[in-house]
Length: 221
Image (cartoon, rainbow, N blue to C red; front, side, top):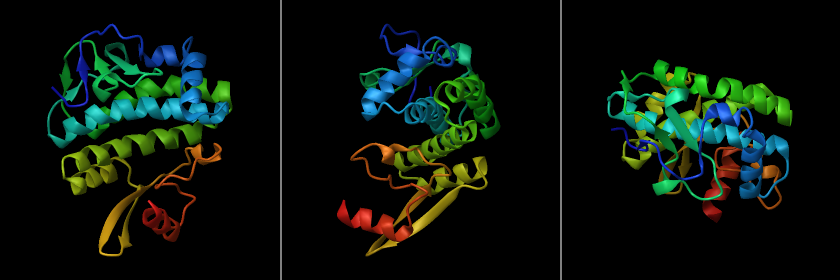
């Protein structure tokens, strides 16, 4: 079984489908992430909910691809994602109802992600006025981030970066030289908007930061 995945129906209230998020459950989901981020801005809420779904889909797929293993069936009818005030059970926000598999490939992952986010992006764009292109950039950033982060947790960052580059040819991966060591930086292709929330700084991978500003953030951490 792939890591980062629950198998079988569960009773917790936070499990939902991408179809519900794109329909009757959208306003509730936006309100949840708005409270979590402490913002009532619909554009930020919309960006967040789309990226949450992409992240939950990306993580178990990343582990399967890193294992050269079969990809779990992440089709919309078989998959639930976690959107709730509380943390996901065991920190895992992806659930499949039945344990089924497909050959592991980036093209299959892309097909699964698109099957979930296509209608969701349309719904979020219509409701929040956040441009669809910005939402799609966020999806790509989150899936790429999941590939890299899953590899980092295994001590195999280069493999995660290689997978992310295969998935997204234009990805901006940089080596940030610091005194005595270096860090890999995944610079997002689009802004998450979180910095527009009062008291929220720009994130490490923000495309609005220079590398010198990233070094300053690191030295002040």
